[in-house]
Length: 391
Image (tube, rainbow, N blue to C red; front, side, top):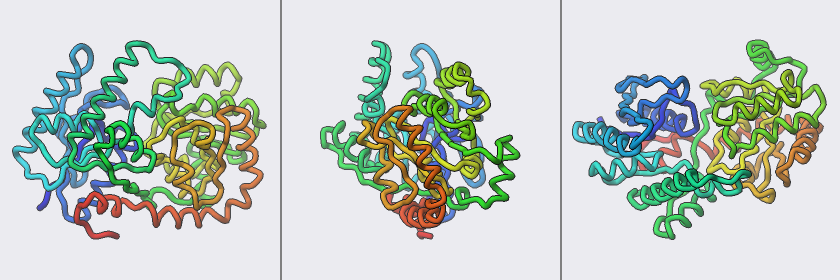
């Protein structure tokens, strides 16, 4: 049986787009007769406990190295990961090795592994551009090192794939045009993400204690500065009381969000939920999905929300953000672009979207058909030049 190794520093139970992509890729490969191993660290962002070093998940085996913190942790993590990876590659003949992390590309090269397929999730230099607060000297030093390592990983990789045209341009620029990556579309799992009927919608609202009569806005993702969820919370101060905002995620900005909620007496109008393994539940409860990120290398949540029957509100590139929403959803209906990164402009567009909701409702199925044809996990794997049966 042919074997494939998938690599990323984090994997489930950690929650994120990259972790989800590894899981979906694994399902396609297993369905096509491959044996899949996943190599990652034992770091657990969900409850700060260490994860098992060897773990079997369905028909996938997960191998983890010990993730170190503190002084000299970078070098310790190189040694720890290299030791486990060397053992794996000595004991197994992998047909393909796919990495979604720059650090593990470099470690693999140090271990003597060749022909790595690298799918970078972001280019840190661009994700930092436009930040509203200035970075400290320590942060600038750390970001510069990360940028250099990302560049090095690109040079070391045999094949580089990106998920959007903007990422293609970013990789070309930072690699000094030495790397010309291939653009491939990720997938969407329609067994998970679908348009709910009224009964399912109301059942979920009851379970999560969400009023059936509210106009529900949803923002979902890591609570970090680049997501700009604080603008969404502040927009609630300009909206009528029948609007409810659900924020789902975790991260360093959570306390800041809570302070804004308390200061503006929004406790009953903004609900904070921890990051979840069931984002589909929240899509099915919402009316509108808000994408307020300053930077997105792709935007998987946009696809999930759109095929779940939500209208989408996002800042336009004209407003100064670096995202791919306009290209991804160019043929879809019920998409609203805000041309200014402000709470006033955001609130006005939210109101407009609800005024047009009855018109947009008939287009939800059309959106799902358009996106399901373009975004398929089996096509994604096939685009990596891995032989599979498309389905």
